[in-house]
Amino acid sequence: MSLICEASFPVRGGDFKDAGKVAVQIKATLKKLGIDPEILRRAAIAAYESEVNIISYARLGKIHLQVDPDRILMNVEDEGPGIEDIELAMRPGYSTASDLIRELGFGAGMGLVNIKHCADEFEITSMVDQGTKLRILIHVPDG
Amino acid sequence: MTLFEVMDILNARLLVGRKLLNTEVKTAFSADLLSDVLAYARPGSVLLTGLTNPQVVRTASVLDIAAIILVRGKIPPAETLRLAEELGVPMMATHYILFESSGRLYSRGMVGCIQKVGNDEIMAL
Image (tube, rainbow over the protein chains, first blue to last red):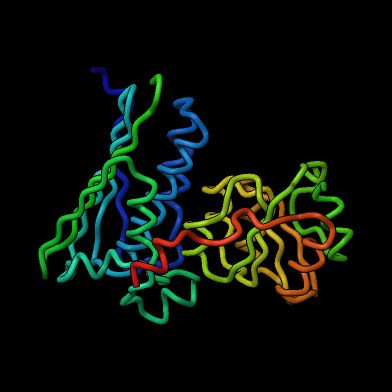
């Protein structure tokens, strides 16, 4: 299987002003590859939510994008506090967001749920005091 | 209806996107929570909101939103306007509140991009 595109997007924790920049970049990257609008939209939403999570909770992190003819894979990694109870974090409406995040319009407790919803395959692993990893895979039909 | 008609109905001032006023829009989403916009808004809808930060524009761009309608007479910062120009997202401002703006568009035939959220969201609580 031939790799079409591979790119890594660093995200700084606490960088609220730039929240969404990486998602817009990832969308532009996928658009250039001629990916179906609905597919790239799902990838961009998952990227946006992941980016906001890193900015909101972690010290630093990155979104690693890998595009193959039949799939988009995003590996999200951060160095941060990690998530103690993943099941609780996945519950719609559950949030530990600060006022700063909420002022921007985020922190409604829908992020991880929405990422899962956008993905065909979704895995989350987390180590308390170390960080969180997400594996987001989206199939590209007739790629 | 077209974005031009939306502007007319809401007595709105155009801030960005004069060239795109002929775009047809049928659905809308109203919210001040971008998390919910990202979760529920559908492509081609108009987004009615009181938020004026650059994240609104990035969210709209990622979601293929047809236009952003700023309600309650909000004036966006220059940075938000610049970003809307750069990403090609039409933006207009109305003095009507969110409820009134939504109602005026609804009564003229525009509908929500979804009617309600699925059972899962509520049953999970």
